[in-house]
Length: 325
Image (cartoon, rainbow, N blue to C red):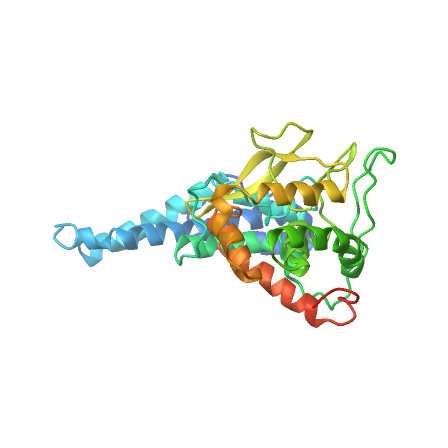
């Protein structure tokens, strides 16, 4: 079967949907891009609908405020969404294709770093939709840890430089991090479990630690380089949320020599003034929520995800053995 039509479609053209359905059955990989564009169109439609709703209060006294004008405006909006999504204007389709297509250079969506003023609170409307889009990328960290964990392919490494620890299973990940987490937690006044849970979310239980041809970055908390970082860096495409919209950005992340350096730098990093509320919280949950409010992550559900992982982790006796409860 030939490629799908590429010319601009009418939003009421159901034949194109039938073509897409047939191609998906015959060759799922070939239709992946088109399906991703359809999803981007749905997301754009949600955003535009919320924008219209927000401005509805100004239409009360307008002479154009009628059912007829709203009918034609809705038609125009749907057609505009169709054309914008076909062009991939938002970039969301590219992210979906990269994720489902196995792009190893796309970091987990939990590695969300934004400016201090970025919205870190969950809000319904476009932000809630953005959170759902982000959860696609870090689904591996959200799955039940008691299920079987399939092996994932690892990028080629230069063995003599930064050997990557074997995180074949979550239990191995915990055992490797526990001594370092205990040391860091004593300095921060939190439990080692919450630090391991945060790292599990950031790295997909260690299976998605950022790596390059030179080896593993050992960046267990996905900390960006920033102007103050003087060490080596690694450029990676990361998913950011800007005003409720997920956007792919090229960002520089820190490279560490080993796990110990990663934890030591994390302790220094979170002692910045903007995270003071986290340090003063006096509890694991307060610590994580303080980090989120301070701008550590732009995912509005970041703290809830970390706490969910920690609770499941410590409730599994086989997974969490030898550590303090």
